[in-house]
Image (cartoon, rainbow, N blue to C red; front, side, top):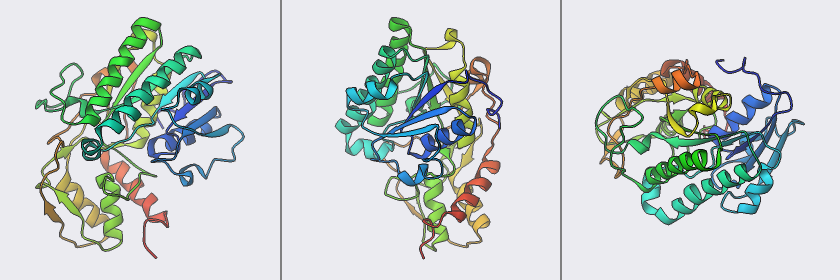
Length: 329
């Protein structure tokens, strides 16, 4: 792995918000494997206890059930913490269009609560999840930091707002903040269920259960799918980054480009299925193409992003095969 050689002070304490979610639980597991202390803060609104069951009894792990919208909870959770990895948020562009007020309360106010709590408790670093959605309707590829377009959803607006708060907290208060603009993360423990599930786990589950998957649009949309191991690396390297490069947001991706229709046929082949998908209209707020320029993260964070799509999808499929909850009995 591109991060297991990293060394932190031996008594380091990490707080992972949203730690029972897809990305958060993978971060918790990786940090515990490296021998450090981890606190997990999650209200279980989108996370699941099953995601942390394999390490919940680790003596270096503590689970805190709590809501980032409650400032007192944030203060208690960050006490004595060195590194905050803030992953707690509600995702999904379509759902944010239906629930803009909730997204503001959770993704903006919740993040501000966490930043302020980290500042008051003197955390060394505050690393937070942003999103490629901040590029909006910017048509040029690859996407480069500093060339953002008009936002297309409340979700994107919440992430852009978080980045602005990150800049302010660095400039005004000296809190080292690092925004990570994730590009279509996938991998083990990603929830395949629900109307707003990410496309890869949703298609895998549908195909494994002999259902007919749905493709929004013509399938010629492209995405820079990013395997979870790359995201873990980025978070941990941001924790070790220089203060001189704090207060910024960085693209975190593989730097590739996959078309949805090609991914669909890759999955059918891997799963041994011959199923024609159903095509329906594109979803409001979705971008057409996504591809990241990762030069800034490479140069300033030391990010490598070694896991390409083909490597990642093999591991992801293997994990879903082993998860009994994916295939209906």
